[in-house]
Length: 67
Image 1 (cartoon, rainbow, N blue to C red):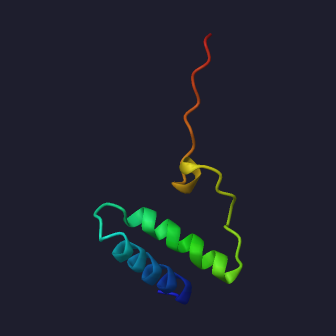
Image 2 (image 1 turned 90 degrees about the horizontal axis):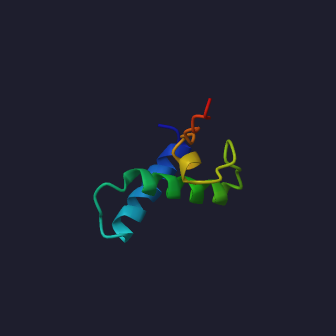
Image 3 (image 1 turned 180 degrees about the vertical axis):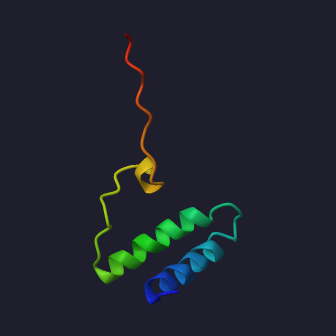
């Protein structure tokens, strides 16, 4: 594991403990830790993340157009 990922892992664990060790929030904690580490290092995200679907790497479904 590279140094950046190790920093993120440790910070995500700290966040998990600060929030009372909730279950099912691993991805949320990882994203928050990654954002904090990137901000500390002065890095920009690989691509702009503008909404919740973007954070998850998803695209909204397009509605079918009537024929």
